[in-house]
Image 1 (spheres, rainbow, N blue to C red):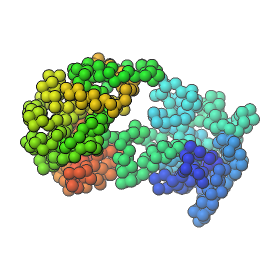
Image 2: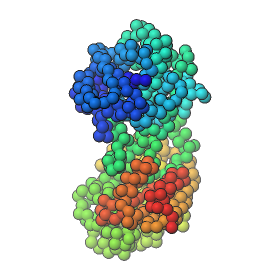
Image 3: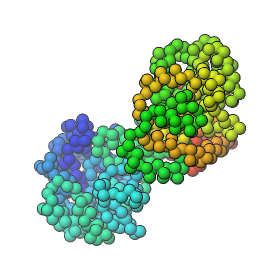
Image 4: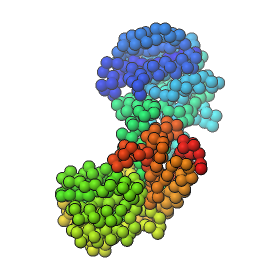
Amino acid sequence: MQALMLAAGMGKRLGKYTNNNTKCMVEVAGKKLIDRAIEAVEEAGINKMILVVGYEGQNLIDYIKSNYAGSQMQFEFIYNKDYATSNNIYSFYLAKDYVVKDDTVLLESDLIYDKSLIRKMMTVKHKNLVAVARYKSWMDGTVVTCDDEGHITQFIDKADMNFELIGDYYKTVNVYKLSKQFCKNVYIPFLEAYMKAYGLNSYYETTLKVVAHLSKTQLNAYEIGDMPWYEIDDAQDLDIANAMFSKGKAKYDLLISKFGGYWRYDSMMDFCYLVNPYFPTKEFTDKMQREFPVLLGAYPSGLNMQNMNAERIFGVDQDNILVGNGASELINALGLVTKGKIAVGVPTFNEYVRCFRNCEIVYVDNSKWNYGLNIQAYKDICNEVDMLCVVTPDNPSGAMLTKEQALDLAEYAAKTNTVLLLDESFADFAEPDKKYTLMDNAILQKYPNLIVVKSIGKSFGVAGLRLGVVASADKKLLSEMRKYMQIWNINSFAEYYLQTYNLFAKDYANACEKIASERNRMIKEINKMDNIEAYPSQANYIMVNLKDKSSYEFCVEALDKYNILLKDLSSKNYFNGKNFIRVAVKDTKENNAFLRAIKTEMRGDK
């Protein structure tokens, strides 16, 4: 058995990373791709590797000769002088004299994968094997279909994919095991005929496509399951691969710094960012999908129409409500028009500190009350500031003012001529007997000093749509905020969501009740353990004190061992190095995975 790597390409889409080197010389998570490939080949017991080189090929040759001089691996180099005008079909053809003499593992040079992949493929009895992964939304390029016995029935170019059949597709990982008989009797003859008819600027998979149609039993699929892999075509791919294949603290820090985009890491369980797993329902998403072609090519309505949509959902007069591109857009606009002294309960959502650039910030340190919300402290600070900001339920503690406390605070703020900003983004997850909203026409009219903010993405399960609302009877304030908002500040998909939501309002209420039930179950299970405390919460997250165990180290371990991403709070202001984490409440299956992990790491139940 031998290995063949096609490494002649120029890798133009990687920009600066391939200015002076071919793609396999790019470093991912501290190690070059070529080193990773050689390590995987050696682990599989293969001691001969052929490389077809071209662009900056001498650099690659010199690197291998210098770094593997004492290696048991035998290296052979083939030069593709036409690398700038040909593609990998020709690079493979240049190696024809090798592949007809011995069985071959074929590798592309821009791949990163678990080093055990080649070894595992060697143990499979089929002589001609194609590594494949279940198709995911982040994947690009050629896919295949298979019959019940694992034979590949067709190769499908991305332009010919039928997304209604997406569940039947597998993405080629571009690692192949090919027998010398297959190469000699089937593949090379087709390759030669294809190049004679269509030229050199094509891909070897094009010929495999023909072969699969003619004789499906020739090629078999090897499904890699959850084994990590990535194809690196451009700088974004490189960034994703770095996060995917880093280890320990480096991996955790990289992922946390991205602030989302975790759909690309489909096997990772995200307990860091907060979204409702039970809503929208399948019926709701199906309805939105049916309108996708229309919405994709259509301008959304202006802001006035969005405010009308919000009026239908929240029952607040359209003149007293604004729809934003996420609550963050609204907080930013509010910060731009607010001056004076503002009090903020901390620790909290950082936008309430970052966005009020023209204000003097005064902090109400909730850690003094074990991260609860002290109504008297909030009243006292009203005598010193122009605006008070309270997040209820609070983030990250989950502590919540009662309705009576919220109204009492609004009343007191009005008497002291203080603007009261209440963020209710997580209030819908509260227990039924504790749930309330001040986003109400009568309340807003009674307290014109009151501003209520709500994130739709977090509680309504549509973080990707970027939706939020702000309500107030202070029409002058809302008018000033609009000056800093675009007329088309949300897209057509978000508008359609707002327009359609009321049809599924009961489903939303049920979804929030499921979260409350799961939250209570998780808190009880966590509090059965020694040296750990889950705080009471009315949100879709739980603040947990790990006490004597480093919360940062625990988050690193959870990601490394269990592929669970958690929010470490130890470095956040007002935790002063205390070992707190914030845990999102997900669906039952994921919550159970977290509970198993934390029980293992915290050494079991009481």
